[in-house]
Image 1 (cartoon, helix red, strand yellow):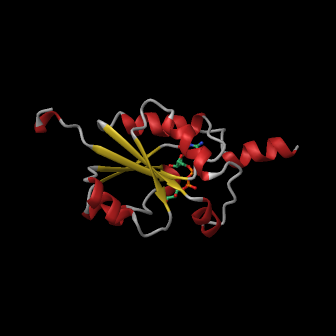
Image 2 (cartoon, rainbow, N blue to C red; image 1 turned 180 degrees about the vertical axis):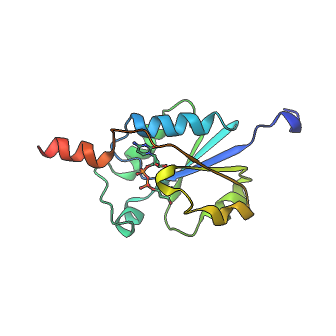
Image 3 (cartoon, protein in one colour; image 1 turned 60 degrees about the vertical axis):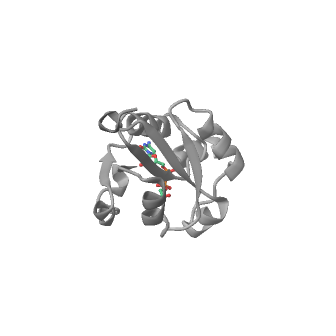
Amino acid sequence: MKIEDRKGIVITYGTFDLLHYGHLELLRRASLLGDTLIVALSTDEFNSLKGKESKIPYNKRKELLESIRFVDQVIPESNWDQKVSDIQSFGVDLFVMGDDWEGEFDFLKNHCQVVYLPRTIDISTTKLKKSFNS
Ligand code: C2G
């Protein structure tokens, strides 16, 4: 592919527990902003650091994400501080997150473009967990 045709490498981070259409819409829109989408998936250990207990173990969450045709690669997210080195080692052009994170990752603008996309309303892992427990 000619360099000028390269739309770029996109990365996004998350737990993606109980994968649902809100996650899918984020990933789909992120994938349309480049020609390669990398997902940095929170490990089970990092989730406990985030104060989140994921219902689905990392290897299954990874398998689900890898089965999505517009996800090109899944890497582990094991700490809060790996983003700059990820951006550098993967040659990332664009960092994307849902806008519940608006502003939180603006420091990455020194390394790549940063875009926050509107969250999909009325769906969340927390809601799904609550509905299972009802
Ligand atoms: N998301 C969304 N719409 C929803 C739910 C989630 O757009 N209804 C987006 C979030 O904004 C996030 C991504 O889907 O960009 C993954 O969401 P989570 O799995 O909840 O990720 P989070 O726990 O916010 O982890 O270092 C960053 C963290 O790992 C982000």
